[in-house]
Length: 150
Image (cartoon, rainbow, N blue to C red; front, side):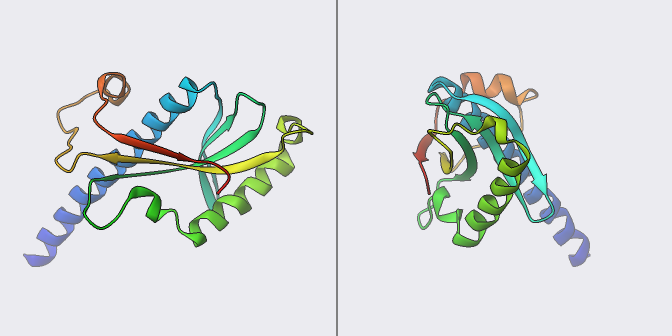
């Protein structure tokens, strides 16, 4: 019985965790577009790492964005989860992407890795929402930080 309850609780946590991650990426995408970025790719995945968003900044710099989202917590901020190890994986994946997509690199600007962190209210829930994209358009109760060239 305990085993079944534990698995059920884990599945609920994972669904909620994944929903928060997806929501964070949608919020980050909306924010990046609002500052003049053009979305090039989403969830670029290789065996050694994933890049949440790849964008072309207003100044033509190719930017690889790691998005970190979490509910409000007394001890941590979302950007605290952008660990050295995680950012090294992002950079390695970015170097692979750059090698395959030289035409996107500006000779003057190059590329960089940014972190966008999103802090949601502690009691946040989207269980009643059917369409997350519509939800993002009307949802504004969050704190967003953008760290460039991490």
